[in-house]
Image (cartoon, rainbow, N blue to C red; front, side, top):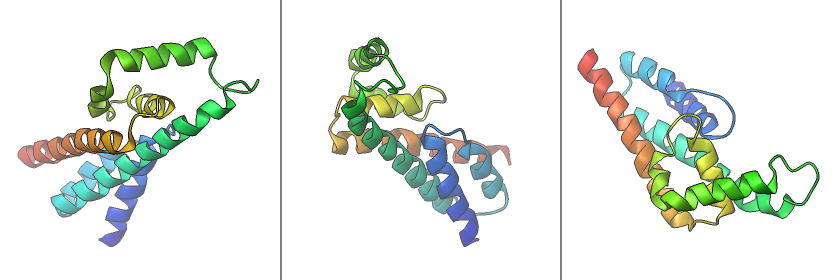
Length: 142
């Protein structure tokens, strides 16, 4: 059983980075197999939150290289993303669990040097709520 929790942690971590992965499918499969909901919630939430912390750190360090030719985004794109983040503020980090926009959101938070304690609290709260809701809905359906 331990391997299931570790696999969920790892999958959740990878899913929170810019790499493509889906932790929800594994979470629900393990829940259906009888794994403890609290253990699943802890593994998924902590892995996914930690992956977002890696994005925050990468965003923070990324700006050192913005004047290099190989830098992946133009100054205009970076500025636009930062303005968009500032428009909605740090509270938007509650939505870091969203597909497509969530991972870049955590990266931009790092470029703007959002205070890490605030970042961690908001991201963990949003991701934890999402996994809790999935587990509750799964339990209702089975």
